[in-house]
Amino acid sequence: MARWLILVGVILTLVGVAMHFAPWLFNWFGRLPGDIRIESERSKVYFPITSMVILSVVLSVILSFFRR
Image (cartoon, rainbow, N blue to C red; front, top):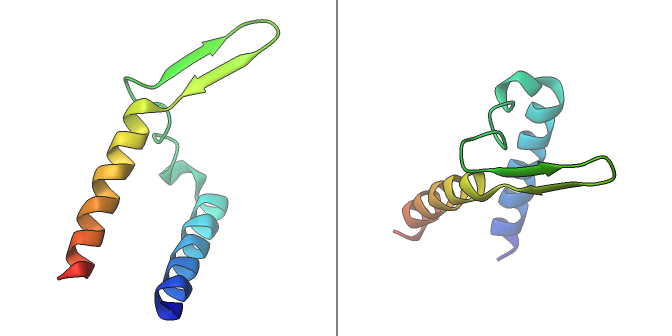
């Protein structure tokens, strides 16, 4: 269990560094068709439905490879 937690931590750190130093790689995420964005003068509401479905599918595929 500890190895998996370390691996997940390293992966999250690498993704965070990539998002910080190369933001143009991740500009598309969160702006896909199907992501709902409501903006008014006083508030902003954002529902990343399509982005989260894609993220869920990708993570499911990755985890299925590790389970085998």
